[in-house]
Image 1 (cartoon, rainbow, N blue to C red):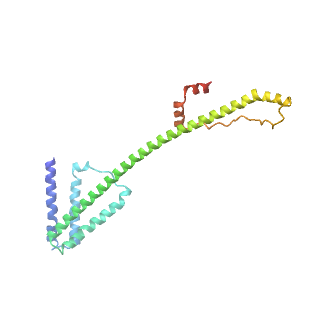
Image 2 (image 1 turned 45 degrees about the vertical axis):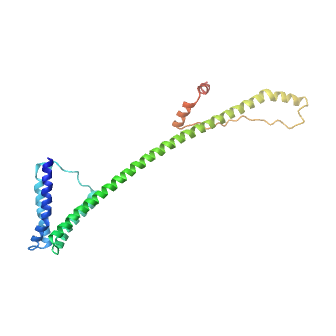
Image 3 (image 1 turned 60 degrees about the horizontal axis):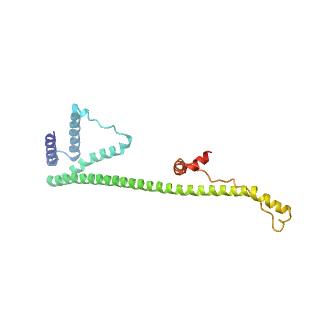
Length: 232
């Protein structure tokens, strides 16, 4: 199979090389427009014959879409203008020089395709590298948020303990200290200073964590004793 494909490639190269010398000979009896029309007629008949081959019927590609319309129009216009311009130039130059220029066109087209492929590969590599950087930054940010959530939990627990201790102190003051202080006042020993300020218990508590990630983390680091106390 590979050997046959190689022979096909060599035959195509030989026919392509003989294209311009034969066209130079045909230009002596026909104008560039007529010869270009005959070339397209031959190409159309040849493709029609290839299309009728059973092996080619099974190689249909995806259908063209509306997005492909500008490229199809550009290809048709360029393919019409290219042979006409080539034959006009062939009238004023030597076939060997025209063949060299035609071969250079193939090399230049291949080079452009290679550069575009390299550019596409470079962009894909850059996208992959940027995606990896974004992933690393996301993991680092998540770790920092986890550390910050631990600090916020510690602050909230400390505030809750302060409120609880304050309320306990107020309750102890009202139950154990103020009754004796009132007796001093009743006996006339409590008029030298001002009035005892009435203290109110604090009802404000820190806001409970609501985010699932923070709640799960809170339950994971909370001591068992606090959990049991809360359920009681």
